[in-house]
Length: 370
Image 1: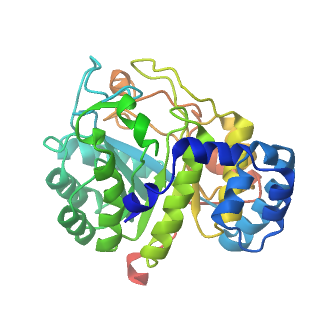
Image 2: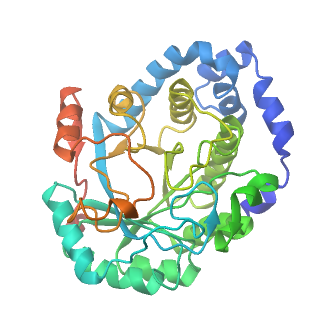
């Protein structure tokens, strides 16, 4: 279990070790044909910042070799903004006095039809963590509506029970995205004050449950802005490395969202600059040539454009973070989780990708090929 592995590491000592890496350590990591977790530590260290150009070039070559010149497009569909957790950094937090809504199944279909008109074939369902109002049973019924229109369904919801994951896979679930937010157990409670999300171990153990039921793909990551980004990045890589070995039939993706403005106005404790984010993307690509790397509309249009050819494999486009926001974009702004940064349409994003010499992929498989 990863909960046993993480106990072997001290957060402060790990941080100090990352910051103590030297230029020689970085050069050794760049020359390695199969970088280790220790090499990854060097690649995310301050010492590696002067080698970002070399990291970018190598990341680009590896990504094109493994994934070709393609960018997978996806879109999040927010089903509900109800949440039973009190997380200090989230606009959906139970403590925030905002209008709440759960989409009806008729409204879900209306949203999906609007999304499909944009060109999307893959959809990511997102909810606040409210298992009574938007739990596994609700999701299963939503699947029945959605899979008539979409080729692939992913979810980003509260951790579920093993049998619930298994049931949803039978109903068409393809991928589960779940973010630990921070791996600093000593500080975790400072950010998660109430609700099921306050249980650090239960959240980490959800990845084990997903692996055991054989979900097609697991997405993991951390929220940049809570703790030292380098240390959280290391523990995320350690977690990824463990999951790959333990559940080798499953595919993996990774992302590292940065905090965006939201109701509550939590101020980040740690700043990840654009340069740091680029360093991290390149480090993950050098560490694992097979992992998928996503970059969402939390980031600016210019930044995302620059990263198309350098290591990422998927991007969201024309995202809305409010339930009902696609079919009725002007009616639901007060329901949004956070404000997005890249406001281009899906068509504009696809054209930008093509202008870079890459293919925008709306759908990369068919049921008949399974």
